[in-house]
Image (cartoon, rainbow, N blue to C red):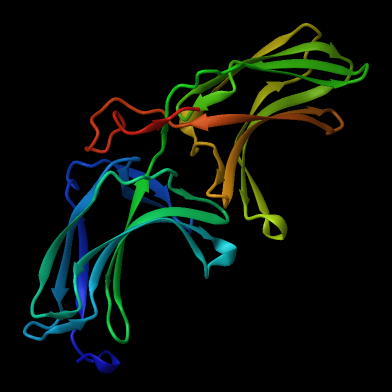
Length: 314
């Protein structure tokens, strides 16, 4: 018997079949730190072993069943009591009864759909996990193993350049152009800024990448903006007819793919923000949304690299 927690208990260890060869990805934790998790892609099977070790040899463990689950869920930090599951697969490892000794179980979830990317932000976390539960009369024994998921996309069929104008009547007229509107996470943003009319004294100009996270809906909608990077592209007053090149390497920054209305719970969007500051510290800016996507690398599926993993079209 295990009344009041004085009976037999157990430790649970979850191991993956290809742990020695599978690639790991760095994932942000809630506390802002980073951890490395085994990396999977949409459509890959998830399998391994569950090791249940009894803490008191020779003493039986009574239980109401042992199960393993593959779960994908979204956690909104302002609503921690509710976890929104979008994927839930269950396999029974053992029916209700007794365990006389430590035991190892095999499990496999075949060709699992993983349509969203792992994400931890300011107000939301999207996670995938393998959860093992030993159901007991008083308190269950639970063990979770988180995994990382990356969503891959193919090259966009259309990727138009961005052309815009910033102007103040009779004072300032600027055109700027970026080479495209959709960039993979290791891409380079290239562009030019043309000064067609300059009648105010510009002190400097800077370009920033802004990440905007939106969670919830209606009265419970929250917006959080974060400046991923900001750098000065011009110092001093430009002359009419002058052009300034822009070149920004995205691979140096901690970016995710653009996420739009993920399971109707949250979105993550990115913007290029061009700011001009005059000698009186007045700021003129123009913001333009860009789409970020994750490109597959050359490798072999099953060892944690990207080739052959499911991709989506942009």
